[in-house]
Amino acid sequence: MEQTLVLLKPSCVERGLIGEVIKRIEQRGIIISALKMMQLDEKILREHYAHLVDKPFFPSLAASMMASPVIAMVLKGVKIVEVFRKMTGVTNGRKAEPGTLRGDFCMSGQANIIHASDSVENAKIEIERFFKPEEIFDYNPCTLPFLYGDGEA
Ligand code: UDP
Ligand code: MG
Image (tube, rainbow, N blue to C red; front, side, top):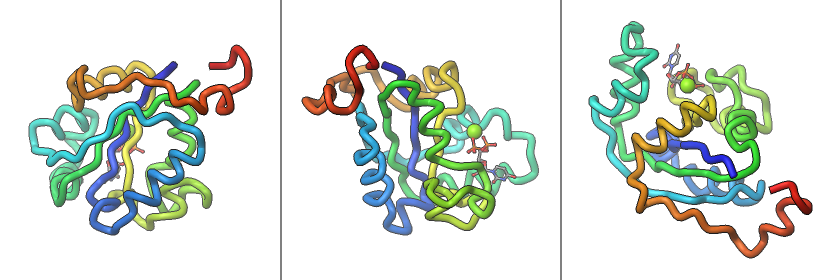
């Protein structure tokens, strides 16, 4: 099954929304294969946001991502990259659809509570950036036959 990399940003951690977000991940039937708290630094953020380092807002973005520890997760599911980007909602929380995580829990284009990989290719790179292989547990829960139909997963 496919995997994706998710970060619960300081805007999620500081506001006490970790549980709310994880609850929605679990109730959707998404499998959590790895989960840890970590403090990001400038080096990892320059890699992670390489497409944004030259933007004028990068210093404030980096500061906002270092304001507290983050929760990093590897999520697993069929077509999880696409499914979870949809659950995340568009970048600006004010434009994100109600029902999405950003659309329900934030009002900001920067403090938008969550990061999710945007392609299968980037998910692979990002998972390697944030996790050692031994930190990822590729188990299937006993509910798997009830999460997907026969031959689907
Ligand atoms: N961001 C920002 N200002 C902008 C665009 C993006 O501060 O004008 C931040 C925001 O926190 C966003 C992150 O940079 O989540 C990464 O931007 P990207 O375009 O990759 O959006 P995402 O994939 O997170 O929706
Ligand atoms: Mg992105």
